[in-house]
Length: 194
Image (cartoon, rainbow, N blue to C red; front, top):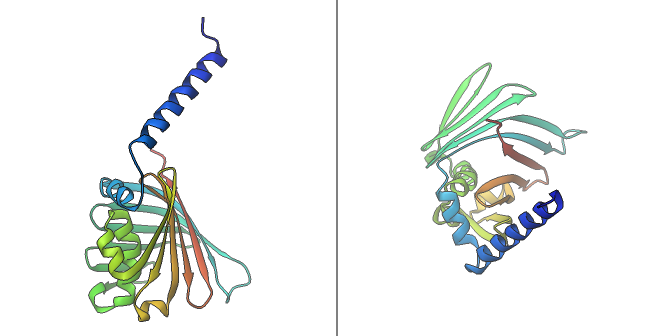
């Protein structure tokens, strides 16, 4: 008769064997991460973003939802502290709030395009586009990885010093942006309940 402790021990052993087998398949690095991200067709998530701005005495916290649909539609809906919506569709970035709606062509603003591609190209597993705008450094493994993106364009460098994206498997769990002026923002991303 199998007791609860025996069943737990058996399950742990099975997990260890599965991990050992997956590790035995070979190294897991940036190319494998990009392949796993390319396989994701749609994601819905919640986010909390904390902005540390030198102009403010306390951090500013925003929260809301994110939606991504491959290959390039991204929507960020901020619910708190006030409603805003950002939609990236193709080469057009649209910002909406309660007072107005503005659209921007990414082709006309290279630094904005570079910033947008740091997130969109990562979600799409598009290493070629990432490398067009950034020096890309990868560390970690399938259970916990990190990309460090350093802009290669001088115009972009005047806005952003570095972007750090972290996650596990094909899930982007955090995005940290270090501004050239010393401000920073940290976004944590969690799955949206079904």
